Image 1: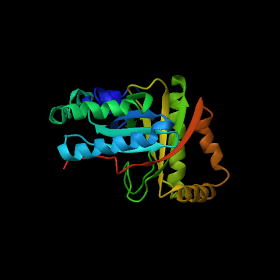
Image 2: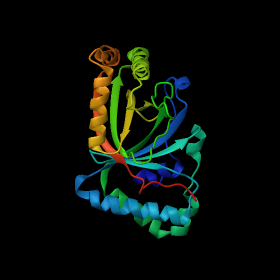
Image 3: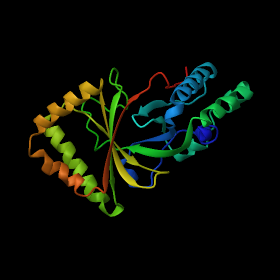
Length: 248
């Protein structure tokens, strides 16, 4: 987390470089691409950082997720770009002194690349009929689906995403999802679909049941999205409440 010393110190992710009218909430994301050989060391330092924050109580907050390809995502809500100018760690860094510097030196040994960017929750495309929330108690397992597209196809992909939601609403699907749109700091256009479940088995069961519920004709609806996508990526992982932080 070299920029958690700088960028991370400035705030936590999200602005818009696309159709702001469809994004109600924004998030600043810091992503660490951890080397496989350093995963245990990274976990150790990440927990030390969380414990230090709980002790010094900086005025910021974040959730944490880690993916099956060893990416760690620190996700914090922001209201406006000016939030990125705030430094919630100034007092904490002064109090910790050399320990603060040493902690981030240990972070830096664990990866070769990292960075920060902004994403936006798109509420009108999200399907969570019981209320929208990034985290749900007892459902820390995640599937993330990235749907990339060319800028010229943005409107068509959005129309397709809306058609998919309408299908889920009509069928009263039990498989809920959240939709995010890329923002400042990303180089490609994409929608991110996040699906929560208890674990891998629970997620697979829900997916199979949902497939049966939607029926064989549902592919025609999904194709309204996929026919305009440039590529598709799928990742699994979990939320890490043990690494999350909120001030007392």
